[in-house]
Length: 205
Length: 163
Image (tube, rainbow over all chains, first blue to last red; front, side):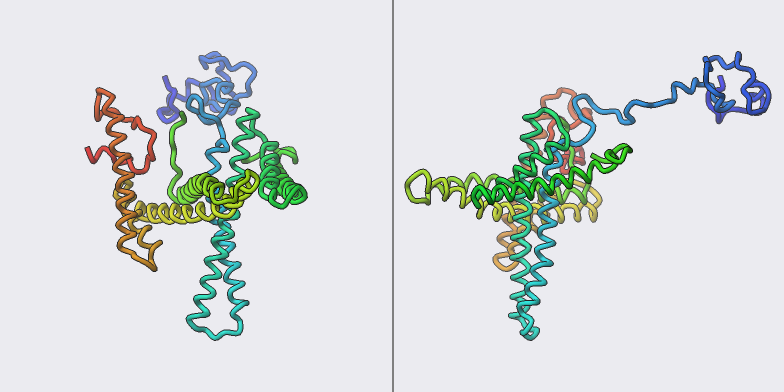
């Protein structure tokens, strides 16, 4: 039968009755059209079957919809390393230029600036990378321990990272570090859920 | 076990950088813990403190150098993939050699290049052997479309051309 709209010829239109907006020959439709306003005279499928309120993606068994923390961990750590390296390089350039302000443009000056750039780049990359590593490790551990995943994990992991990172400074240092971690991860969680708090659905995990 | 999936090429660099940093930092952390423990004055307090200090100072440095190696390797690998238009173990071996050469630019370049290339040839060769061994368990042989071993998919995308 004429299921494919492309195969419809002029004669086939007569099957559906008059050429008006109304779908008059409903008894010829062959499928139940109960309760639905006629969407199109060419539609010979019950439009109720076209509504998809299930997920749009088919997932293999055992896979979850979004990426877990472990899969994101390497990307986070690498991203923080690279960001730290770039920031440190720029900072090193600034410091090198200001420290050798009084020198003429010569090889020692360039070498000194280059040393500054590489050292600052390396230090910042290592610092940010190890922070990201601690945060990811805590996040994975908390997620596995709780069995659930939500923003509470983010905030807890951030706080614990701050506490551990500043723990050599004694109890007060650890508390300060924990506060900084709590603030930063709280802001991040807030930013992630901004749409949700505003009332619309979140666009990303 | 979930299917191993590598990122497409630009993001693969960040992923590999992070993976290398993790390996370096955790491996370095364990190594420095033992070393700091042993190189401290006797008494468990001193030893613990020495161990923690060594971890805090040295492990990020080792992680950082691993991260540079991994990031540079991945960058050259992605560049070769784009230039050559295919993914196979030769990319990885060449990237290893070039990474070794670049990172030893001020010292013995050829020696480091050779070492890097040989190291990666060993890794890739081990991977290929593992895949062949794992696929030999299936009696249907080459018609089997799915790669049974969850190894880095990039090197084995064109595996069938080597059979």
